[in-house]
Image 1 (cartoon, rainbow, N blue to C red):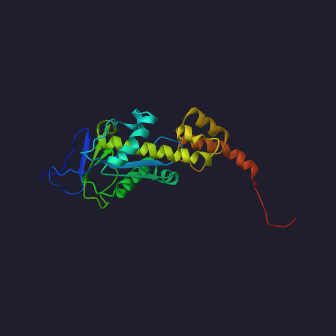
Image 2 (cartoon, one colour; image 1 turned 180 degrees about the vertical axis):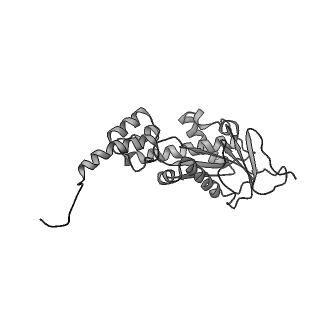
Image 3 (cartoon, rainbow, N blue to C red; image 1 turned 90 degrees about the horizontal axis):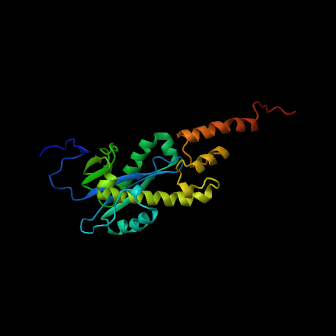
Length: 233
């Protein structure tokens, strides 16, 4: 058997040698939330059942919220297996957004109740998987969320799950309207950052949030004493 080799537009990396034609449980993996200024990055992994096809699968960004909401429960009901995981704001700031995205993808794959024989990841980079107990190969596919059904399904689950998380967080941080923009840097969100302190969900490693914190620093310093003594007067 020949080892897996590079091919365009995907990239196949053999974690373990596998007989040809054995890609029976293919997991599509995608993320949602790399670009927002606030909230987690979410990843999903989906193994579709070829006997239970799902009409209308596409890149979640190309679908309306109503279409995503309709498809998500169908995916969960008809898929052979699916899982969702995320990396939170602290992990994003500690690892950087790419590292946190890979962490969420690893967690989603580990949560699958069925082990895939092959993994297809949207994009041109692969999360490190060689140390995981997965007897599979892995492939990066540019534009996979629009071309590969399992990746499209993962895109939809990741997006709908993250949107629901941001809607649930919205009442905890009034004034930011997280339910409306889901943490993305809309004009309304940037205006809110100019007028109030960033919330604990805001990513300190992202430039607009750093700018908001820097602008707030002189105000905070004005409220705090610059010297002190424990000597009683």
